[in-house]
Length: 395
Image 1 (cartoon, rainbow, N blue to C red):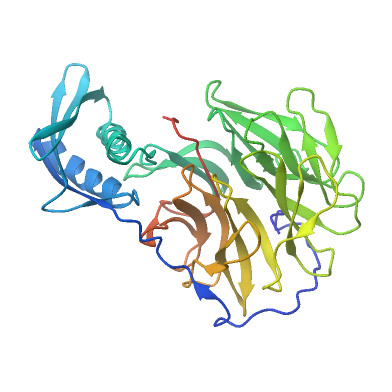
Image 2: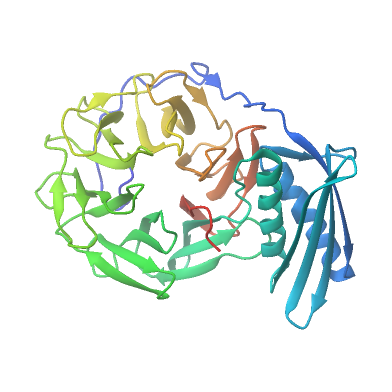
């Protein structure tokens, strides 16, 4: 369960499934629009821009680079006194589809902005190239909460500590990340604000204050508290610090995730003796079990369009990422490499999932694009996990 590892939970795990019990995730295989790309201009920028633009297009899940595309994207990158200028024109059959100018200090940001505009103009869907992912990294000196763009730039640390940092969650408005920190000797809830460039403690109930999840409106936070002697899910009003208990059983209830309407939550509970996934109204009430094919399920994440839930399940001795319909049907296994694949986090368009994995030996953060099932490593060093994705529009 998404509870800090220093808290020891004895949970009976039964009925684990064999590795051959589940159908592999199949590519969405939506037809991608082919786009040919050319870049000219400052020789120090051309190769960077060309390589990144191709990566953004091919990882979009909607477009694909091709020598003979439906559309042709011609880009010119130059330096000026104000920084870098990127001019882009997109044509199809000699007809102009898009002509835009971008300026700024970083070539990667400009390429991402154009790639997202290209995706939107050709498909009507939002692109995710400009979005960022935050995650926790454990190093020899402690823990760090960092944010990383989808390019060669290094991650930027927003908070570091000798004590445990875990379970970050990015706010819908993009300005805040809430997370659990043991800085004060207790598993307290903290909030980092990008606009204020600082972190502050926002909740310190006795025991656990962990596994936060924002409601889609940003007005409420679901989280795990143990202040009443049991591990339960509560709602927190971040403006008043008022908490409302949602689960009232003697079992462990944690890892809540809101539906995109905000009317329901999916969460983990061991009320039948081992961790399974349940759905209940976000105001409380009866919870309905939605998983039954694994002896251990955890870390559910509801997709942005509401039709699917990603989660971690035990298969034999390993842990892998699965996706199922919100009804609990149509289960698909997403990861097959490594033995510890956890923490699924949907991208804001529902076409990508970030997760942590030890598939390359050291635990790191990866992204999978679900149309072609392409996997890309994101984190840049250290033992990294607990990804959370920025909303669209974050810069």
